Amino acid sequence: MITEIFKVDENSILELEKASKLLNDGELVAIPTETVYGLGANALNKNACLNIFKAKGRPSDNPLIVHIAKPEDAEKIAYTNELYYKLAKRFMPGPLTVIMPKRDIIPYEVTAGLETVAVRCPEHKVAHKLIEIAKIPIAAPSANTSGKPSPTTAQHVYDDMNGKIPMILDGGECKFGVESTVISITNDSIMLLRPGSITVEALKEICPNVKIASAVKEELKQGETALSPGMKYKHYAPKANLYLVNDKNINFIELAKEKQKTENCAIMCYDEEISLLENKNLLPVGKKDDVKEQTKRLFILLRRADDLCVDTVYAHLPYDEGESLAIYNRMIRACAHRVLGG
Ligand code: TXA
Ligand code: MG
Image (tube, rainbow, N blue to C red; front, side, top):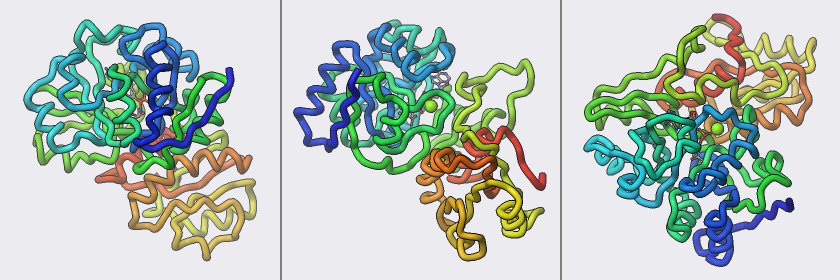
């Protein structure tokens, strides 16, 4: 299959109509969103959704997020509640995914057999316009090969999906760079399953009762079932061994300089540290205090680490609070919990 890339914005009606037709015909289309690129299919078409799993090499027990044009469209696919609408009023459209009981119209192929469905209303104008034109809910996981970092540019998608899907909509670089915050809700409580750009602190302003699933910060214990199936898979892993350095206990620069002499390594350093290191295989993550920029560069740098063909990568252990929790969660899993300095 030939994979075509089209540069688009929300006014590219011809391309969006072509994408809409493909989706309605049961084909897959890669779509830009404000978080990462998604691999979209008609969420009401079982076979189309099964093809997502094939194209990604995704384990069949890992459910998909369903994307809608307006918060109210959740009524057609899920049993909502008051808390959903409070959250929607504040955070939608935007990088928030809410898990609720599913309605029959959503096939089990989408939810991997679960009785719940994950609902997200993306803010990206292209994604929004396409869902409107297609007039169907769109199931879309991140458009990477399973186990690789999520794609934040159309080129990343092409690198993983060339020959497997007919169309990639190129809407530019994603604004946030990590996947949406995923929560499950009851009437009066929130469980955080995957941290994203909408923080625990922001969620607490709408509902004070927010719990963080243990797998967000820690490894799943043996025999423990994941509240969100995606949590149990190794994710976002570069080919090299990634080590996180707790710079409270270890001098990062001294360690990095030593490793630069003795290993074929890359260093993910703060921008301020570039001049202190040998100018070889440096992957600057952004300024120390600029968590938004660090988030945006995260997956780009993990992919670049692969291109460098190094054996090891060293990076700062991120903070595990606020907006940085999303980076912590991805990095701790990318490094398979290899932390130097405790
Ligand atoms: O930002 C995003 O969320 C991107 C864009 C494309 O929207 N999508 C994305 O999808 O990251 P994916 O499939 O890569 O991650 C979805 C996560 C997985 O960890 C999955 O296990 C979890 O959401 N999930 C989906 N449905 C669920 C459900 N019913 N119950 C528990 N977890 C669910
Ligand atoms: Mg994913």
